[in-house]
Length: 158
Length: 277
Image 1: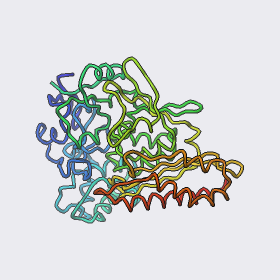
Image 2 (image 1 turned 135 degrees about the vertical axis):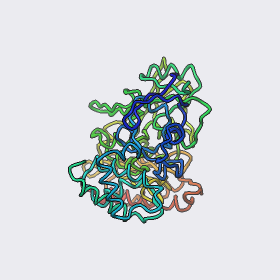
Image 3 (image 1 turned 45 degrees about the horizontal axis):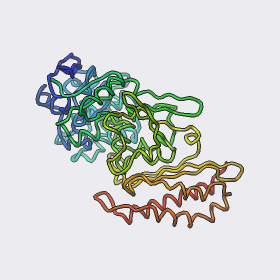
Image 4 (image 1 turned 30 degrees about the vertical axis):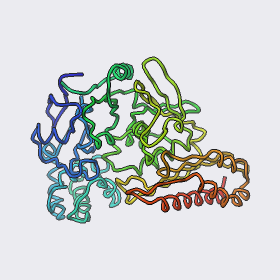
Protein backbone atom coordinates (compact mmCIF):
# COMPACT_ATOMS: atom_id res chain seq x y z
CA UNK A 1 0.00 0.00 0.00
CA UNK A 2 1.20 3.54 -0.63
CA UNK A 3 0.51 6.75 1.28
CA UNK A 4 -0.95 8.89 -1.48
CA UNK A 5 -2.35 8.65 -4.99
CA UNK A 6 -0.40 10.81 -7.42
CA UNK A 7 -2.11 12.00 -10.59
CA UNK A 8 -2.59 15.02 -12.80
CA UNK A 9 -5.82 16.95 -12.34
CA UNK A 10 -6.68 19.59 -14.92
CA UNK A 11 -3.02 19.95 -15.82
CA UNK A 12 -1.67 20.16 -12.26
CA UNK A 13 0.17 17.41 -10.45
CA UNK A 14 -1.70 16.43 -7.26
CA UNK A 15 -1.26 14.00 -4.35
CA UNK A 16 -4.51 12.79 -2.82
CA UNK A 17 -4.49 11.16 0.59
CA UNK A 18 -7.79 9.36 0.04
CA UNK A 19 -8.97 5.74 0.15
CA UNK A 20 -8.06 3.71 -2.94
CA UNK A 21 -11.61 2.40 -3.03
CA UNK A 22 -13.23 5.89 -3.03
CA UNK A 23 -15.06 6.98 -6.16
CA UNK A 24 -13.32 9.63 -8.28
CA UNK A 25 -16.70 11.40 -8.49
CA UNK A 26 -16.89 11.93 -4.72
CA UNK A 27 -13.24 12.96 -4.45
CA UNK A 28 -13.62 15.52 -7.26
CA UNK A 29 -16.71 17.07 -5.69
CA UNK A 30 -15.85 16.90 -2.00
CA UNK A 31 -12.03 16.88 -1.75
CA UNK A 32 -11.18 19.06 -4.75
CA UNK A 33 -14.49 21.01 -4.75
CA UNK A 34 -14.93 20.53 -8.49
CA UNK A 35 -18.72 20.46 -8.54
CA UNK A 36 -19.16 20.68 -12.31
CA UNK A 37 -19.02 16.89 -12.15
CA UNK A 38 -22.54 15.69 -11.29
CA UNK A 39 -23.88 12.51 -9.75
CA UNK A 40 -26.96 11.40 -11.66
CA UNK A 41 -27.37 7.64 -11.35
CA UNK A 42 -24.15 6.51 -9.65
CA UNK A 43 -23.97 3.40 -11.80
CA UNK A 44 -22.60 4.43 -15.18
CA UNK A 45 -25.91 4.82 -16.98
CA UNK A 46 -26.31 8.59 -17.29
CA UNK A 47 -22.92 10.17 -18.03
CA UNK A 48 -23.49 13.24 -15.82
CA UNK A 49 -20.20 12.48 -14.05
CA UNK A 50 -18.18 12.08 -17.25
CA UNK A 51 -14.54 13.22 -17.24
CA UNK A 52 -11.55 12.53 -19.46
CA UNK A 53 -8.90 10.14 -18.15
CA UNK A 54 -5.78 10.10 -20.33
CA UNK A 55 -7.96 11.77 -22.96
CA UNK A 56 -10.65 9.09 -22.91
CA UNK A 57 -14.23 9.53 -21.79
CA UNK A 58 -14.96 7.82 -18.45
CA UNK A 59 -17.74 7.87 -15.88
CA UNK A 60 -16.15 9.12 -12.66
CA UNK A 61 -18.72 7.25 -10.54
CA UNK A 62 -17.16 3.98 -11.72
CA UNK A 63 -13.52 4.89 -11.16
CA UNK A 64 -11.82 3.94 -7.90
CA UNK A 65 -9.07 6.35 -6.88
CA UNK A 66 -6.39 3.66 -6.70
CA UNK A 67 -6.72 3.00 -10.44
CA UNK A 68 -5.64 6.58 -11.21
CA UNK A 69 -2.01 6.38 -10.11
CA UNK A 70 -0.03 8.31 -12.76
CA UNK A 71 -3.10 9.18 -14.85
CA UNK A 72 -4.26 12.52 -16.19
CA UNK A 73 -7.81 13.58 -15.31
CA UNK A 74 -9.64 16.47 -16.93
CA UNK A 75 -12.98 17.79 -15.69
CA UNK A 76 -15.20 20.49 -17.15
CA UNK A 77 -13.36 22.99 -14.91
CA UNK A 78 -10.10 22.25 -16.70
CA UNK A 79 -11.66 21.99 -20.13
CA UNK A 80 -13.41 25.35 -19.87
CA UNK A 81 -10.04 27.10 -20.06
CA UNK A 82 -9.39 25.77 -23.56
CA UNK A 83 -10.02 27.28 -26.97
CA UNK A 84 -12.01 24.19 -27.95
CA UNK A 85 -14.39 24.72 -25.03
CA UNK A 86 -15.15 28.25 -26.25
CA UNK A 87 -16.29 26.79 -29.59
CA UNK A 88 -18.37 24.05 -27.95
CA UNK A 89 -19.93 26.51 -25.47
CA UNK A 90 -20.99 28.85 -28.26
CA UNK A 91 -22.42 25.98 -30.32
CA UNK A 92 -24.42 24.62 -27.36
CA UNK A 93 -25.80 28.11 -26.71
CA UNK A 94 -26.71 28.70 -30.34
CA UNK A 95 -28.50 25.34 -30.68
CA UNK A 96 -30.41 25.64 -27.39
CA UNK A 97 -28.67 22.47 -26.24
CA UNK A 98 -28.60 23.55 -22.58
CA UNK A 99 -31.87 23.61 -20.70
CA UNK A 100 -31.73 22.56 -17.03
CA UNK A 101 -27.96 22.10 -17.44
CA UNK A 102 -27.46 19.06 -15.23
CA UNK A 103 -26.24 16.82 -18.06
CA UNK A 104 -24.26 19.59 -19.76
CA UNK A 105 -20.79 19.12 -18.21
CA UNK A 106 -20.90 15.40 -19.05
CA UNK A 107 -22.30 16.08 -22.53
CA UNK A 108 -19.50 18.55 -23.20
CA UNK A 109 -16.82 16.09 -22.08
CA UNK A 110 -18.41 13.46 -24.35
CA UNK A 111 -18.43 16.03 -27.17
CA UNK A 112 -14.71 16.67 -26.68
CA UNK A 113 -13.95 12.92 -26.52
CA UNK A 114 -15.83 12.42 -29.79
CA UNK A 115 -14.36 15.37 -31.70
CA UNK A 116 -10.82 14.58 -30.58
CA UNK A 117 -11.19 11.16 -32.20
CA UNK A 118 -13.44 12.13 -35.09
CA UNK A 119 -13.35 15.87 -35.99
CA UNK A 120 -16.14 15.58 -38.60
CA UNK A 121 -18.70 13.14 -37.22
CA UNK A 122 -21.94 12.22 -38.98
CA UNK A 123 -25.31 12.47 -37.24
CA UNK A 124 -25.23 8.78 -36.30
CA UNK A 125 -21.61 8.97 -35.10
CA UNK A 126 -22.59 11.86 -32.82
CA UNK A 127 -25.52 9.87 -31.41
CA UNK A 128 -23.20 6.91 -30.82
CA UNK A 129 -20.58 9.17 -29.19
CA UNK A 130 -23.17 10.65 -26.81
CA UNK A 131 -25.05 7.37 -26.27
CA UNK A 132 -23.89 7.06 -22.66
CA UNK A 133 -25.15 10.53 -21.71
CA UNK A 134 -28.78 11.05 -20.77
CA UNK A 135 -30.62 14.36 -21.19
CA UNK A 136 -34.21 14.63 -19.98
CA UNK A 137 -34.87 18.15 -21.36
CA UNK A 138 -33.78 18.61 -24.94
CA UNK A 139 -34.82 15.40 -26.69
CA UNK A 140 -31.19 15.26 -27.94
CA UNK A 141 -31.71 16.85 -31.38
CA UNK A 142 -30.42 20.22 -30.19
CA UNK A 143 -27.37 18.60 -28.64
CA UNK A 144 -26.60 16.72 -31.85
CA UNK A 145 -26.98 20.00 -33.74
CA UNK A 146 -24.63 21.70 -31.26
CA UNK A 147 -21.93 19.07 -31.83
CA UNK A 148 -22.39 19.41 -35.59
CA UNK A 149 -22.03 23.19 -35.30
CA UNK A 150 -18.96 22.90 -33.04
CA UNK A 151 -17.30 20.55 -35.54
CA UNK A 152 -17.93 23.07 -38.33
CA UNK A 153 -17.07 26.27 -36.46
CA UNK A 154 -14.03 24.73 -34.80
CA UNK A 155 -12.64 23.15 -37.95
CA UNK A 156 -8.87 22.74 -37.54
CA UNK A 157 -8.98 22.80 -33.72
CA UNK A 158 -9.55 19.06 -33.39
CA UNK B 1 -2.98 5.34 4.05
CA UNK B 2 -4.52 4.26 0.77
CA UNK B 3 -6.53 1.05 1.15
CA UNK B 4 -5.58 -0.46 -2.14
CA UNK B 5 -2.66 -2.17 -3.86
CA UNK B 6 -1.27 -0.84 -7.12
CA UNK B 7 1.30 -3.34 -8.43
CA UNK B 8 3.07 -2.91 -11.77
CA UNK B 9 3.82 -6.57 -12.38
CA UNK B 10 1.70 -9.71 -12.37
CA UNK B 11 4.15 -11.39 -9.97
CA UNK B 12 3.70 -8.61 -7.40
CA UNK B 13 -0.07 -8.80 -7.86
CA UNK B 14 -0.06 -12.58 -7.27
CA UNK B 15 2.05 -12.14 -4.15
CA UNK B 16 -0.33 -9.51 -2.76
CA UNK B 17 -3.30 -11.69 -3.67
CA UNK B 18 -1.86 -14.65 -1.78
CA UNK B 19 -0.98 -12.68 1.35
CA UNK B 20 -4.05 -10.45 1.68
CA UNK B 21 -7.80 -10.41 1.52
CA UNK B 22 -8.44 -8.26 -1.58
CA UNK B 23 -11.05 -7.61 -4.25
CA UNK B 24 -9.73 -7.70 -7.83
CA UNK B 25 -10.26 -4.42 -9.71
CA UNK B 26 -9.77 -4.50 -13.49
CA UNK B 27 -12.04 -1.89 -15.13
CA UNK B 28 -14.24 -1.25 -12.11
CA UNK B 29 -17.49 -0.95 -14.08
CA UNK B 30 -19.28 -3.78 -12.27
CA UNK B 31 -17.43 -3.52 -8.98
CA UNK B 32 -18.05 0.20 -8.43
CA UNK B 33 -21.80 -0.26 -8.72
CA UNK B 34 -21.67 -2.72 -5.82
CA UNK B 35 -19.31 -0.43 -3.86
CA UNK B 36 -17.71 -3.03 -1.68
CA UNK B 37 -15.39 -0.68 0.19
CA UNK B 38 -14.60 -2.72 3.29
CA UNK B 39 -12.00 -4.91 1.54
CA UNK B 40 -8.99 -3.27 -0.18
CA UNK B 41 -8.86 -3.42 -3.96
CA UNK B 42 -6.02 -5.01 -5.88
CA UNK B 43 -5.75 -2.80 -8.96
CA UNK B 44 -4.85 -4.76 -12.10
CA UNK B 45 -5.04 -1.83 -14.52
CA UNK B 46 -1.43 -0.75 -13.99
CA UNK B 47 0.09 -4.07 -15.10
CA UNK B 48 1.21 -3.78 -18.75
CA UNK B 49 1.43 -7.55 -19.26
CA UNK B 50 -2.30 -7.95 -18.59
CA UNK B 51 -3.11 -5.48 -21.38
CA UNK B 52 -1.16 -7.19 -24.17
CA UNK B 53 -2.63 -8.99 -27.17
CA UNK B 54 -0.30 -11.46 -28.88
CA UNK B 55 -0.69 -14.21 -31.44
CA UNK B 56 1.08 -17.15 -32.98
CA UNK B 57 0.17 -19.25 -35.99
CA UNK B 58 -2.78 -21.00 -34.41
CA UNK B 59 -3.74 -18.97 -31.36
CA UNK B 60 -4.69 -15.51 -30.09
CA UNK B 61 -3.72 -14.53 -26.52
CA UNK B 62 -5.65 -11.64 -24.96
CA UNK B 63 -4.44 -10.15 -21.66
CA UNK B 64 -7.27 -10.33 -19.14
CA UNK B 65 -7.17 -6.60 -18.36
CA UNK B 66 -7.43 -5.54 -22.02
CA UNK B 67 -9.96 -2.75 -22.30
CA UNK B 68 -12.87 -3.10 -24.72
CA UNK B 69 -12.18 0.09 -26.67
CA UNK B 70 -8.58 -1.07 -27.24
CA UNK B 71 -9.73 -4.51 -28.38
CA UNK B 72 -12.12 -2.86 -30.87
CA UNK B 73 -9.08 -1.17 -32.48
CA UNK B 74 -6.92 -4.30 -32.56
CA UNK B 75 -6.78 -6.16 -35.88
CA UNK B 76 -5.91 -9.46 -34.21
CA UNK B 77 -9.25 -9.63 -32.36
CA UNK B 78 -11.88 -11.81 -34.12
CA UNK B 79 -14.74 -9.88 -35.73
CA UNK B 80 -17.41 -11.81 -33.83
CA UNK B 81 -15.84 -10.72 -30.54
CA UNK B 82 -15.67 -7.12 -31.76
CA UNK B 83 -19.31 -7.27 -32.76
CA UNK B 84 -20.35 -8.33 -29.25
CA UNK B 85 -18.09 -5.74 -27.60
CA UNK B 86 -19.54 -2.95 -29.74
CA UNK B 87 -23.01 -3.69 -28.29
CA UNK B 88 -21.83 -3.34 -24.70
CA UNK B 89 -22.91 -0.30 -22.65
CA UNK B 90 -21.57 3.07 -23.87
CA UNK B 91 -18.28 4.64 -25.03
CA UNK B 92 -17.30 5.67 -21.48
CA UNK B 93 -17.83 2.17 -20.14
CA UNK B 94 -16.06 0.55 -23.10
CA UNK B 95 -13.10 2.82 -22.23
CA UNK B 96 -12.82 1.11 -18.83
CA UNK B 97 -14.37 -2.35 -18.84
CA UNK B 98 -12.16 -5.37 -19.52
CA UNK B 99 -12.67 -8.76 -21.11
CA UNK B 100 -11.27 -10.55 -18.04
CA UNK B 101 -13.68 -8.58 -15.87
CA UNK B 102 -16.63 -9.76 -17.95
CA UNK B 103 -15.49 -13.35 -17.38
CA UNK B 104 -14.63 -12.96 -13.68
CA UNK B 105 -17.93 -11.19 -13.00
CA UNK B 106 -19.66 -14.26 -14.50
CA UNK B 107 -23.02 -12.65 -15.16
CA UNK B 108 -25.25 -14.92 -17.26
CA UNK B 109 -25.87 -11.77 -19.35
CA UNK B 110 -22.17 -10.97 -19.91
CA UNK B 111 -22.05 -10.04 -23.59
CA UNK B 112 -18.66 -11.44 -24.54
CA UNK B 113 -19.42 -14.80 -22.94
CA UNK B 114 -21.57 -16.52 -25.62
CA UNK B 115 -18.92 -15.57 -28.17
CA UNK B 116 -16.10 -16.96 -26.02
CA UNK B 117 -18.08 -20.17 -25.44
CA UNK B 118 -18.71 -20.59 -29.18
CA UNK B 119 -15.02 -19.96 -29.92
CA UNK B 120 -13.93 -22.61 -27.37
CA UNK B 121 -11.92 -19.99 -25.50
CA UNK B 122 -9.61 -21.15 -22.74
CA UNK B 123 -8.37 -19.16 -19.77
CA UNK B 124 -4.85 -19.09 -18.43
CA UNK B 125 -5.13 -18.97 -14.65
CA UNK B 126 -2.07 -17.99 -12.62
CA UNK B 127 -1.09 -18.20 -9.00
CA UNK B 128 2.30 -17.36 -7.54
CA UNK B 129 3.59 -20.90 -8.15
CA UNK B 130 1.26 -22.47 -10.67
CA UNK B 131 -0.46 -21.96 -13.98
CA UNK B 132 -3.20 -23.87 -15.71
CA UNK B 133 -5.58 -23.61 -18.63
CA UNK B 134 -9.31 -24.10 -18.26
CA UNK B 135 -12.06 -24.02 -20.85
CA UNK B 136 -14.35 -21.07 -20.19
CA UNK B 137 -17.36 -23.37 -19.86
CA UNK B 138 -15.67 -25.16 -16.95
CA UNK B 139 -14.57 -21.89 -15.34
CA UNK B 140 -18.01 -20.31 -14.86
CA UNK B 141 -20.22 -22.50 -12.68
CA UNK B 142 -23.22 -20.28 -11.94
CA UNK B 143 -24.44 -16.68 -11.76
CA UNK B 144 -21.48 -14.66 -10.39
CA UNK B 145 -19.70 -17.93 -9.54
CA UNK B 146 -16.40 -19.16 -10.94
CA UNK B 147 -13.78 -21.68 -9.90
CA UNK B 148 -11.14 -18.94 -9.46
CA UNK B 149 -9.23 -19.72 -6.27
CA UNK B 150 -8.60 -17.02 -3.68
CA UNK B 151 -4.95 -16.66 -4.66
CA UNK B 152 -5.45 -16.80 -8.44
CA UNK B 153 -5.78 -14.26 -11.26
CA UNK B 154 -6.95 -14.75 -14.86
CA UNK B 155 -3.90 -13.88 -16.95
CA UNK B 156 -5.06 -14.51 -20.52
CA UNK B 157 -7.97 -15.45 -22.70
CA UNK B 158 -6.78 -17.92 -25.32
CA UNK B 159 -8.69 -18.24 -28.59
CA UNK B 160 -7.97 -20.86 -31.28
CA UNK B 161 -7.71 -19.18 -34.70
CA UNK B 162 -9.39 -22.16 -36.31
CA UNK B 163 -12.61 -20.91 -34.77
CA UNK B 164 -11.89 -17.18 -35.01
CA UNK B 165 -11.50 -16.85 -38.78
CA UNK B 166 -14.73 -18.49 -39.97
CA UNK B 167 -18.21 -17.05 -40.74
CA UNK B 168 -20.24 -15.99 -37.71
CA UNK B 169 -23.62 -14.78 -36.52
CA UNK B 170 -24.18 -12.60 -33.44
CA UNK B 171 -27.28 -10.91 -32.07
CA UNK B 172 -27.98 -9.16 -28.79
CA UNK B 173 -31.50 -8.24 -27.74
CA UNK B 174 -31.78 -5.40 -25.23
CA UNK B 175 -34.29 -2.67 -24.35
CA UNK B 176 -32.28 0.02 -26.14
CA UNK B 177 -29.07 0.37 -28.09
CA UNK B 178 -26.86 1.88 -25.39
CA UNK B 179 -26.42 0.91 -21.75
CA UNK B 180 -28.77 -2.06 -21.97
CA UNK B 181 -28.07 -5.34 -20.21
CA UNK B 182 -29.04 -8.19 -22.53
CA UNK B 183 -32.48 -9.73 -22.37
CA UNK B 184 -30.76 -12.47 -24.35
CA UNK B 185 -27.91 -12.90 -26.80
CA UNK B 186 -26.85 -15.48 -29.35
CA UNK B 187 -23.50 -16.30 -30.96
CA UNK B 188 -22.84 -18.84 -33.70
CA UNK B 189 -19.98 -19.84 -35.99
CA UNK B 190 -19.83 -22.26 -38.90
CA UNK B 191 -17.61 -23.52 -41.69
CA UNK B 192 -18.59 -25.04 -45.02
CA UNK B 193 -16.23 -27.21 -47.02
CA UNK B 194 -17.12 -29.10 -50.22
CA UNK B 195 -20.83 -28.58 -49.60
CA UNK B 196 -20.73 -29.92 -46.06
CA UNK B 197 -20.87 -28.32 -42.64
CA UNK B 198 -17.43 -29.02 -41.17
CA UNK B 199 -17.62 -26.80 -38.12
CA UNK B 200 -20.60 -25.54 -36.14
CA UNK B 201 -21.00 -24.08 -32.66
CA UNK B 202 -23.53 -21.82 -31.00
CA UNK B 203 -24.11 -20.40 -27.53
CA UNK B 204 -27.01 -18.65 -25.83
CA UNK B 205 -26.59 -15.82 -23.27
CA UNK B 206 -28.95 -14.74 -20.45
CA UNK B 207 -31.24 -17.76 -20.81
CA UNK B 208 -29.84 -19.89 -17.99
CA UNK B 209 -27.60 -19.69 -14.91
CA UNK B 210 -24.59 -19.81 -17.22
CA UNK B 211 -24.18 -19.41 -20.98
CA UNK B 212 -25.69 -22.45 -22.71
CA UNK B 213 -23.80 -24.49 -25.25
CA UNK B 214 -24.84 -28.03 -26.19
CA UNK B 215 -22.07 -29.82 -28.05
CA UNK B 216 -24.16 -33.00 -28.35
CA UNK B 217 -26.72 -31.12 -30.46
CA UNK B 218 -23.95 -29.48 -32.49
CA UNK B 219 -22.67 -32.98 -33.36
CA UNK B 220 -25.98 -33.75 -35.12
CA UNK B 221 -25.12 -31.20 -37.79
CA UNK B 222 -21.44 -31.84 -38.38
CA UNK B 223 -20.60 -33.36 -41.74
CA UNK B 224 -24.11 -32.75 -43.11
CA UNK B 225 -24.86 -31.29 -46.56
CA UNK B 226 -26.87 -28.06 -46.80
CA UNK B 227 -29.93 -30.05 -47.82
CA UNK B 228 -29.57 -32.32 -44.79
CA UNK B 229 -29.11 -29.30 -42.53
CA UNK B 230 -32.30 -27.77 -43.95
CA UNK B 231 -34.23 -30.93 -43.14
CA UNK B 232 -32.83 -30.98 -39.61
CA UNK B 233 -33.73 -27.39 -38.67
CA UNK B 234 -36.98 -28.18 -36.82
CA UNK B 235 -35.39 -31.11 -35.03
CA UNK B 236 -32.39 -29.01 -33.92
CA UNK B 237 -34.66 -26.21 -32.65
CA UNK B 238 -36.66 -28.79 -30.67
CA UNK B 239 -33.49 -30.21 -29.15
CA UNK B 240 -32.32 -26.75 -28.04
CA UNK B 241 -35.77 -25.94 -26.63
CA UNK B 242 -35.13 -28.74 -24.11
CA UNK B 243 -31.87 -27.21 -22.84
CA UNK B 244 -32.85 -23.53 -22.75
CA UNK B 245 -34.59 -22.70 -19.47
CA UNK B 246 -34.65 -18.95 -18.91
CA UNK B 247 -36.24 -17.09 -15.98
CA UNK B 248 -38.53 -14.07 -15.58
CA UNK B 249 -36.76 -11.02 -14.19
CA UNK B 250 -36.91 -7.23 -14.41
CA UNK B 251 -35.44 -7.23 -17.92
CA UNK B 252 -37.60 -9.81 -19.66
CA UNK B 253 -39.77 -12.92 -19.34
CA UNK B 254 -38.87 -16.58 -19.68
CA UNK B 255 -41.31 -17.10 -22.55
CA UNK B 256 -39.96 -14.14 -24.55
CA UNK B 257 -36.35 -15.13 -23.98
CA UNK B 258 -36.90 -18.69 -25.08
CA UNK B 259 -38.97 -17.80 -28.14
CA UNK B 260 -36.54 -15.16 -29.40
CA UNK B 261 -33.47 -17.33 -28.71
CA UNK B 262 -34.92 -20.16 -30.77
CA UNK B 263 -35.94 -17.73 -33.52
CA UNK B 264 -32.35 -16.49 -33.70
CA UNK B 265 -31.12 -20.08 -33.85
CA UNK B 266 -33.55 -20.75 -36.71
CA UNK B 267 -32.36 -17.65 -38.51
CA UNK B 268 -28.72 -18.71 -38.04
CA UNK B 269 -29.46 -22.15 -39.50
CA UNK B 270 -31.21 -20.53 -42.48
CA UNK B 271 -28.17 -18.31 -43.01
CA UNK B 272 -26.00 -21.44 -43.11
CA UNK B 273 -28.31 -23.19 -45.60
CA UNK B 274 -28.24 -20.15 -47.90
CA UNK B 275 -24.51 -19.49 -47.54
CA UNK B 276 -22.05 -19.77 -50.40
CA UNK B 277 -18.65 -21.26 -49.74
